[in-house]
Length: 357
Ligand SMILES: [Zn+2]
Ligand SMILES: [Zn+2]
Image (cartoon, rainbow, N blue to C red):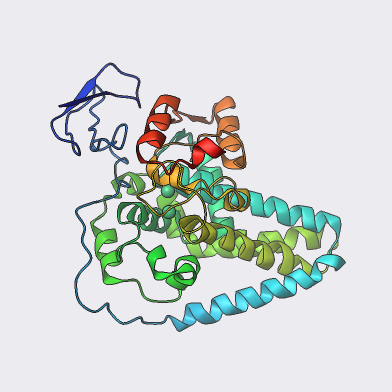
């Protein structure tokens, strides 16, 4: 028999397990602790528990279904990256205000993904008031990485069926596939099947998210391309070509690749101090580019932690942003894993790399 206290809510409930793997006792807040390896599986409350690894899933045996290319996406992505390279060549001719504006657009769009569709909507790791949700939704359209509803669905499936056929960007299929290739081919049937079965009721109940979904295309035209282009051209007489190719095209392409590196590089390169049995890694370089999302071994081990890291603001602008929002009264209920739980987990399943650094 195994006993463990609820660490997540610091309530006094003791979970009692009768075998080494699963437990279905509930804490005072109605939370089920599912596995010994997790402090508290947020299994029973709406919006939670949808991102834990489903260990019952088995890939189908036999040959894999043939890859079907999506030529529209291949052509658009190729043009986009060519445009971004052209944008790079324009940097020496751009005004300093234009470069500052491009960086601002990048940071805002990245927060729409990291603080928005990832930490708030996919993982429910903190709560946000209506004004903050509206801001994050606008920022999310600047990023143009599918609407929030679709992003959350793909991301929850990624956590639940990580590194299998049902994972949309299954890193077992190589760097290119997990980086961009998954957007250039039709989804594996298991991704579609598992995505359809996923409970997204919490997302459907969010009127701001559903409003964005309804008006997604015009919002992207306006916020990802038109606004970033018009501001430098109108306010400081930047040339229209530079205004389009740097703050819109180049900034958008860098934002996409920063996010994709979390799916590719952070699933392949780095240490695994929290759980050496899973592929996601700690990758500080990816964290730097993706505003704190590269602590990926930690994140897949403790997906409900609002900081996606145990190191606070280090390489983690998103955590600083969420903390600031809390200070301003726009966010609350940040979920955090206790130091004791993290240490115990490192000792039990980590690769030992935390001792050396
Ligand atoms: Zn991942
Ligand atoms: Zn995640």
